[in-house]
Amino acid sequence: MALRVLVVDDSPVTRVMLLEMLDLLGHKAVAEADAMDTAVEAYKNQKPDLVLLDLALTRGDGLSTLKGIRRIDGQARVLIISGNPQQKIQEEAMNSGALGFLSKPINMKELSAALTRIGTEPR
Image (cartoon, rainbow, N blue to C red; front, top):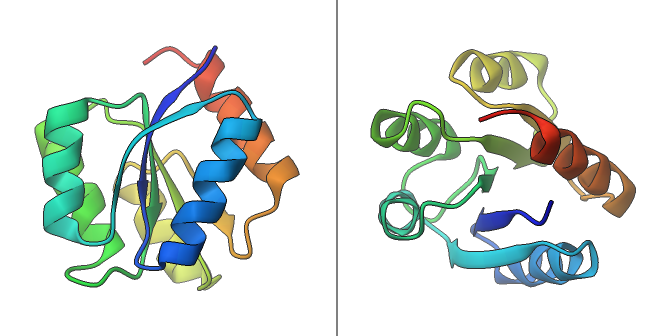
């Protein structure tokens, strides 16, 4: 099943890379954002199947963004991506409702596996 994905990352280079990976994997990026406010607004407007969310953003942070999105939609599916592999951060993200955590640099095989798993789970 092709997923409609919101890509949220402060790095334009990483966003482009993720957009290209999604396309190669047969998924569609419906919007992209680099900050908490634009990510939450894009989620409201696009209602994507999944959010790929970095923890470091230009305004706000990924955990606050995750919580903001989950307030809008308690069933929102969010996959955290981050260059910060600290276990405490991963646990906080998972406790806040994230479905998983991928470490940067993003590996296409791991992204594919996560998207396949998420795409087959009931919402």
